[in-house]
Image 1 (cartoon, rainbow, N blue to C red):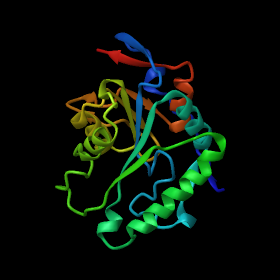
Image 2: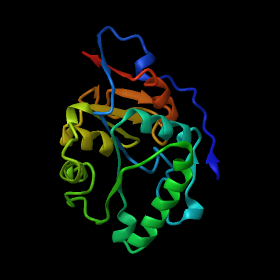
Image 3: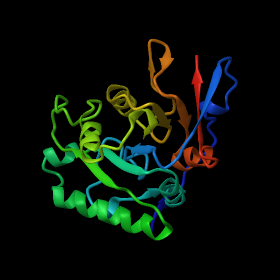
Image 4: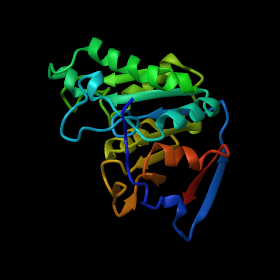
Length: 215
């Protein structure tokens, strides 16, 4: 298994001194974790696509993080934009093969993913394509027990954070894997927390709590 090495020198927003109130909430099996795929679980080929198992590389620490999440969250779902299918670069079966391979990498250590949702159309108007909330709505239909107030979205693009806002997912976690700074809107970050990578986020919730700064 090839694992991408990265530096984890950036400071998370949660570690910075902020003159605000910190809201600490406990996580249990009634919670749901929404994950983007490329740039969160595996290396994002910026400007391109992951089109085969041979091109699929996990970030360092993802196997351990996914095993921890499996113990903490009742549901874990992936929501990923895969325009490469609409462009004819990858078949749905090819995508399924990549996801099967991903499960083979994480399951021996205890990790799991309950469902993969993907948006395949080229048009930004596709209701399933992030930042539209369509994939979250599908998850709610498939798993009615999901409570969005007890949900976290982890992504590495502004569209992931806007997806969480549009879907009313309570916590928004931004990873710096491809963009150095967290996305802003009107001078304010649109993410609640900000980490170098998925393992860093996992380490921050090892005690089964998540913190949110209330301005």
